[in-house]
Length: 77
Image (tube, rainbow, N blue to C red; front, top):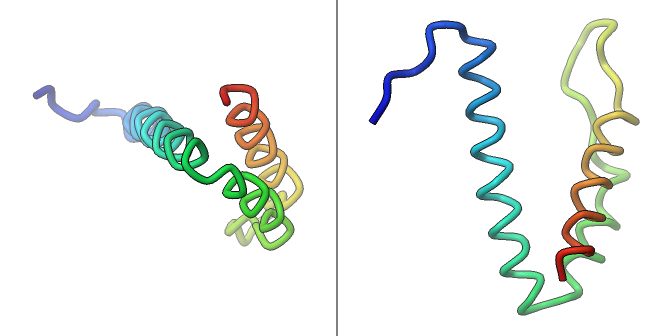
């Protein structure tokens, strides 16, 4: 096993990519068993928000990332 990258931003990117891959695979598997899952996830996106408490906060951008994720899952089915 390799050591964490010394740059915390690079390490955060590595974690984000790994989590996205695992989450995508899990959701793809579950949606194959219950296609309504993607509809339910898509319907929940209006409740998603950005946790930032400064000028970088962008709730719409966070929702758009999630929408692209769901669209990508739909294409994979």
